[in-house]
Image 1 (cartoon, helix red, strand yellow):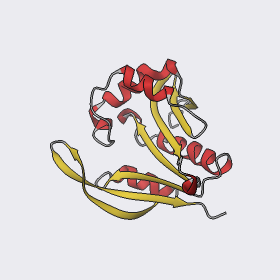
Image 2 (spheres, helix red, strand yellow; image 1 turned 60 degrees about the horizontal axis):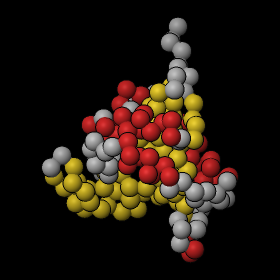
Image 3 (tube, one colour; image 1 turned 45 degrees about the vertical axis):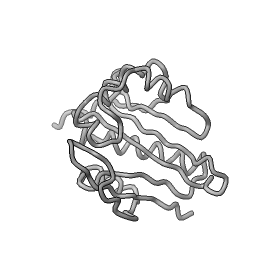
Length: 169
């Protein structure tokens, strides 16, 4: 009999999660796939949490109160782009391939569709991040362009893709 999937739940990010978020992005395998600088302080994350508005959704994936992932969704503040949101996600390496990313994406996109009425959700992903590309494609994201030498990673310039999902209804 296969082992039971551990209980994972999604919650709004609060001050109680700051240490866990900080630890998540201190992990080298997570940090290298996002645009965060390594070893940011808890104060950086605390200030980001303080920027919360209705247009900024910050969620965490929790297993027994441990932060194992997070997703952020930000609706554009520009009036002519109020139908657009930007998404960012991170999952602890020990939890890759266990459905955490899918759960975070499903939750964030449900909020985007059913509560924020976003028509377009966009993101940027390093071009060689195959697991993330597969996750995003699973949720209907398509590559719209290649951003050459987009960011420095591991001491070299790395390309990224810009991807978006357009809601059809």
